[in-house]
Amino acid sequence: MPGSTDTIADADGGGVRAGSSVVVYLPVSVRSRLRELAAATGRSHTQLVFDALNATHARLVDLLSSGRHGPSDGIFLAQRSGRRRHRETRVQVSIRPHPANLAVIDELAARHTTGNRSALISTALDEFLPAGAPAVLKGVAP
Image 1: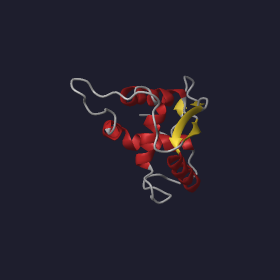
Image 2: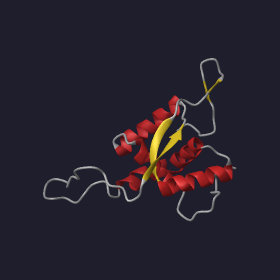
Image 3: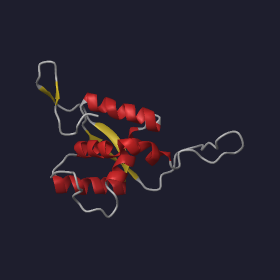
């Protein structure tokens, strides 16, 4: 997985800047913790999303599987119908990943959340930024 602080080199060996903005929807509490850590460390939301995905990618199957399938109603899994209900209000957060990094996020989202970037990133950040954690986490350089 590409590192969050490395610049990806283009064909001429020069650095390539981040791509255009990508909007993800996060629970308000996760966004608050993200903002707090960004302010404390000076790292961007994009860098912290990469940090969270790097820290949790080996456990995403377990983190995302709880509540993924409903109970069985015979030979079929119970399906939810209608709009997805969230326990907490969701808000938009923009990140600016390089297209190659966005491709990695999209591949993880396709593998683990049927393509839902917001669910993937929200889960990784929620695990990476536990409620009540100190503003600066171990392994995240200011």
